[in-house]
Image (cartoon, rainbow, N blue to C red):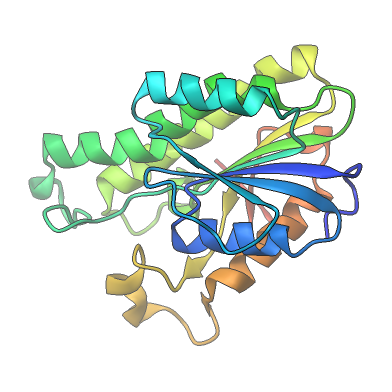
Length: 245
């Protein structure tokens, strides 16, 4: 795993207590090529692996982001930064089926977690990536954020916030490529994963297409292993296919 990276690999997982985030931490911690995994979450929850360093932070609070970046800067540079956060629904927020359901607070919540948080994380964490070798910044996005692939409608806020994230990724990749030719900035579509985010919507998932977090994390790390500078700015599915914007 991650054979295209120079060793020892230092990794950061943002959103390390979610289903996919925790699976990323476990997979990375189990690799002989990985020296350390820095697991960031709002709770600073502990992971039972010797290689894991836990850090509390909130990516919607910029001073907290700055403090986390300063702490990580003392032990970097890093080869891989994974942003494994996302929001689709909550106790008082559900995906909109029609435009009549649009609500400002719900829209704001989607954009805060799906777009603003990852963008601010990139602002402070991209400078922590190694500059003299392959290094990747990847954020979880979604196929439903593809404008050209939208044929069903609905889910206005989630779709729009992920589309905005995809634009952030593309724009970040352009700026990064001007000075750091070996760094790669991409979005990742994990498929439908058996987590709290997808749980209410699993009824229509085709047989064999509901993935465990461990499977999705492993497949996404394979994608990360395959991409190079020529792929920067792209959105890639769990199977390696590039998704159009």
